[in-house]
Image (cartoon, rainbow, N blue to C red; front, top):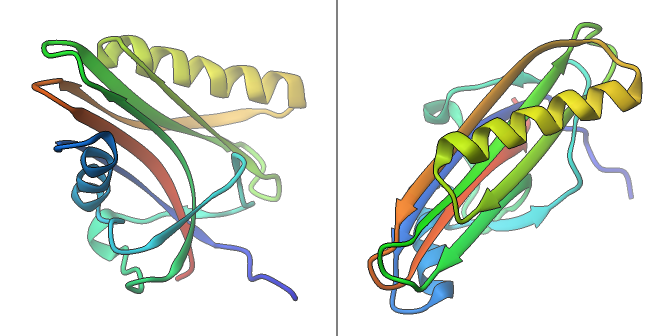
Amino acid sequence: MMVKTPNCYCLVKGAAEGRTRLNAFDKALLEAGVGDTNLMRMSSILPPAAKEIPVKELILPKGGLIPLAYAAFDGTTPGQMISAAIAVGIPEDDREPGVIMEFEDHAPLTNVEEIVRQMVIDGFEYRNRKLKEIKSLGVEHKVERCGAVFAAAVLWYK
C-alpha cells in the first residue's frame, strides 16, 4: 500500500482541565481542533517543500487517520505549571525534509519553547543541513485539579 506524502502542515495547541488525565487530554485535543480525529503519532520529519497553512484552513475528516508529531503533558498537582511546545525547522533547500521537535515539562512555556527550538537547531546540525527558519507554538497551563496541554504539527494534504 502506498501512502500519499502530506504537502502542508499546521501548528495547533490546546490546554484543558478534566475529571481524569484522559478527559483533560481529550478536551485539550478538542481545543486544538483535532479531538474528533484518530491521531497517528509519527516521528518528526517534515516532508520536503511542505507549506504551513493557518488553522482555519485545516479541515480534517471526522474520525480520519491524521498524521502528526506532538507534545502532551498532564498534571494533577494544583498550582503546578505544565507546558508543551512544538517546533518546525524549515531547510534552506526545499528539496530536503525539515525537522519537527516536540517537548513538554513542568516548566513555564518560555523555558519549554527555548528547549524545543534548540532541539531543531541540533537536529539540523547533525544532519549537516542548513536551517532557513524555525516556527514554534506552545501552550502552558496552571493545573487546577487535573490538567493537560497539547501542541502538535499536523501533516495534511491540500
